[in-house]
Length: 77
Image (spheres, rainbow, N blue to C red):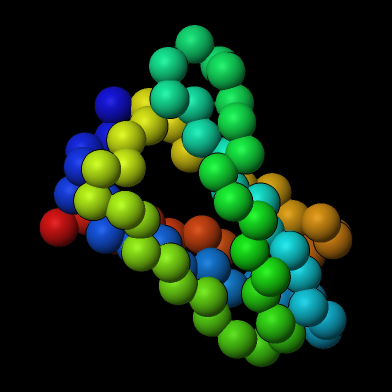
C-alpha cells in the first residue's frame, strides 16, 4: 500500500493542446480500479495536486484523453 506520506503529483505533457489526465486508484490491491479524479492540464503547463492526508491506495495509474507523451511524477515525504 502506498504510504500516507504521499505529498503531491506532477503532470506534464508534450501535446500542442490541452489534455485531460485521469488518475485511477486501486485501494484493495485486487485490480478494482476507481477514478480518483480527472485533471485538465493546459498546453505547456505543469499541473500539481496535493493528495489528502488520509489518502491511501495500493496502485495509482494515469491515462490521457489524447495521444501524447505525458509524465506523472509522485513525491513522497
